[in-house]
Image 1 (cartoon, rainbow, N blue to C red):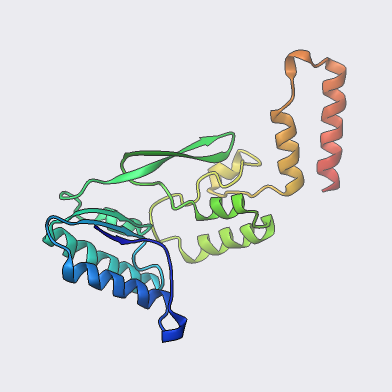
Image 2: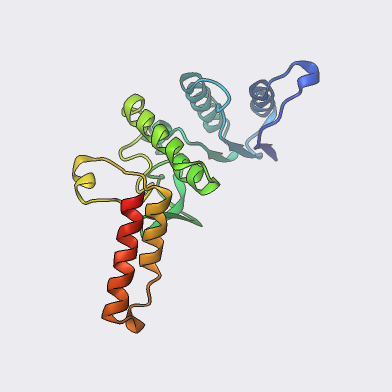
Amino acid sequence: MYCRVGSSDNLARGESTFLVEMQEAAHILRTATFHSLVILDELGRGTSTQDGMSIAYAVMQSLLEMGPKTLFATHYHELAQLDTSTVQLLTLQVLEQGGEIIFVRKVIEGIANSSYGLNVAKMAGIPAKALRTALSFQKKHFSEYGIANPQLDLFASEVADDHLTGEMPILSETESDVLNTIKTIDLPSSTPISALLLLEKLQQELEAN
């Protein structure tokens, strides 16, 4: 069994993370056989997109020729657009609920709609301002990269027009709090007066934001 997962380096020997990754990949290609099990995760991520994707493609083709049973995980969507008649395409299921992304941890047939990197950044606590900058940069510089609609529903939409124009607004912290409050309202036990008072309070919070 061969496994190229995770990142590591050897600073004492002057070996970068990418060099170590390539050394491990080279060892696999030199010694794996038809009877081997090979697991590769995100091969080529430690260098430029062009170099990394090219290396990932070359290694994938080499493994197809060698014939070992292989699990090859990658965020290079372009690789899935090539001839995949000899491989099985699998992805982890992702659901959208209430404008939020939920990673189900269930393997299904097909390819992912997105890498969801910005969604994960949001989950990790990256500030909304930084996410806005990242999303703007992504749309400006990488519109031709990957498949359509990257980072679907990064945040809930503010207005319907945003969907028509292709914009994906990112809610501020206050707006997210207001949205969460609305989601948790116990409507059956609410009175018209209490609902109006709550609505007024939420409007004031948004106006003050």
